[in-house]
Image (cartoon, rainbow, N blue to C red; front, top):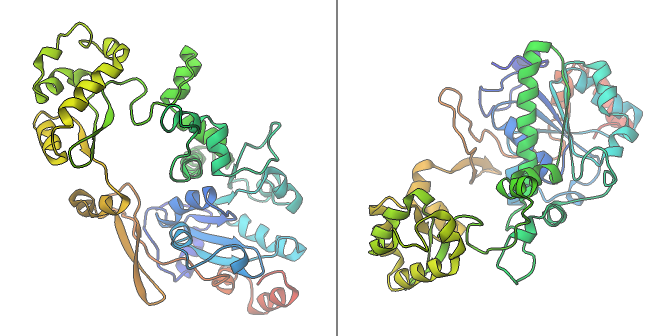
Length: 404
């Protein structure tokens, strides 16, 4: 069990838990859009007591709760609504934070200070609190107050300049990659801070941004620039340094082929071109890189005469990495995906729906989809009662507009 500040509350909660792994961990979730919810979902899916704080008003003004994207982001959580601009509403949030382990926000940096819920304020009332801030550009610097979303960061990180085919102009990645990576980085930071807290007894401020996370995720391209001064460009479906790694047309479609450098001899044997193994233009990785176009032309000439299934079968016989090009639907219907059970089901409004499961498993404390996203403010009374509010106090706060 994860011993958290809210461990004493866990027996009071009756809603289904997704896992026993983070049992007792209390998380206050003030996040919206995507990066923050992705972060908190990692905690909710592993059994943390996640309390999502929503702003009062008409929830349809902020999100469509029946949308598949919303359902996926906010599963396994509970929802309350607090008016943080009301002094009494702010006091309610501070009371929750006093008994929480993790507090996650993704406002622009100045907002938390205006609301009086910044790190220093919460640290003063709960020194063990792990306070997490996710922003577009970071908590300081000339861009700290700029609004920013995934597409803006894809452009400013350099990602769009290396995605797509040469000469076709910048190209975004087909999903909100910087949001997802920032959320996962923030979750990793939380687990590091929780581990450190077991030694020090103190919380700390975890910070990340879409820009930091995305530029870290550029990985080899960032290292090539910082170490070697190389500014990478677009190479389409090819690997920036490995040849041949590419998408090749077959008689009936396309295949991906990606032999690592040490596999060059077996790759040549698979193609029936053993003469290329020691060819002076192709025998080393560096030489193949210099003759990239020629290598691709040779491979395309052979593969283009075959159907996709035959190409894959031949390469697999020689243990060369290769595979088909799927649609998302085909990917989920592939036998391996079905064996891995990449979708889990949960009941929403009386109907069973499937959502993507967590991408890693634990043998003793697995994660499940315990419950669909909560309705707006569904658990306000339940949660406040768990944190010591009487029924009369809850009624008064509701009447005053501090909670909804």
